[in-house]
Length: 138
Image (cartoon, helix red, strand yellow):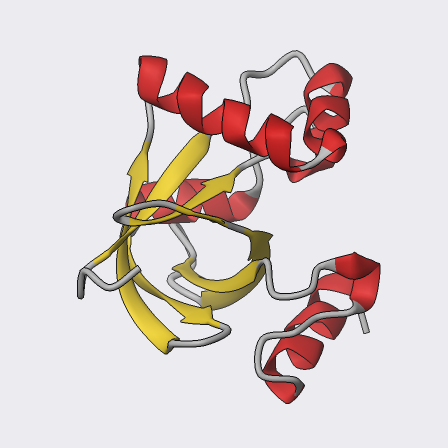
């Protein structure tokens, strides 16, 4: 079983709590549909709450390419996430730009030193998306 699948199964088995890698209750399971394949997939992602939903960063652990889920969410922005307390929540992914992206990225840098390490490993600008809660109850 790969790491992501292990995290997904632990999230679902423990009501959203993931002790693997010390994630605790900081993850969302983000459903995304393949931009070309149309296949539904799930990605466990660190998320920072906002007034409108959650922020996620397409860091890919500092890889030189954006993660597949990022491209998939751009192609199919209306999706659902699995939240530790609220279950499935309908969201719309918005790719943040300019000052909004920079302010959101600063929140990731403040949340974990790992994000600064990811940024240092790549020359690409790491995208940040807001998953806007369509029910308005973030």
